[in-house]
Picture 1 (cartoon, one colour):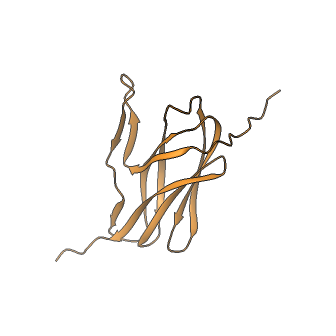
Picture 2 (tube, rainbow, N blue to C red):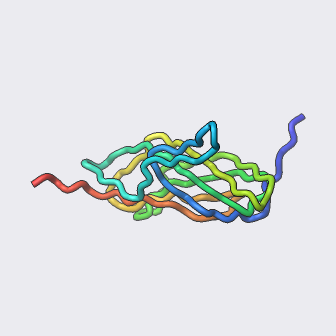
Picture 3 (tube, rainbow, N blue to C red):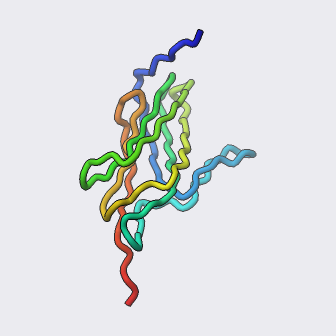
Length: 138
């Protein structure tokens, strides 16, 4: 018989939400490696797609948290994708890291795109990228 886990009602504090090319932990040291951190994309032609990773660091969390991240085109408010996961935090004084490699995400037109982070249904914060048209060569 499986037992459903109740989501924690303790609101975690989002220390960092960063978008990068790759986010990994060094297996020998546990150090976090974020490669190619960015918040702006130069696009040659719209619509476009881009694979990326999202790194989250939280503290003041304790218990089980269902994690939900909406990928939103801010200009229209349209949700273009969603990632769901889980987080378990045992001690409120220790930070928790989450790495999310994402598939190629749609970038339909120039504008701002946000990753809106929720834990146990509570909005924690966001990270954004601005997609701009790459200037044509002279």
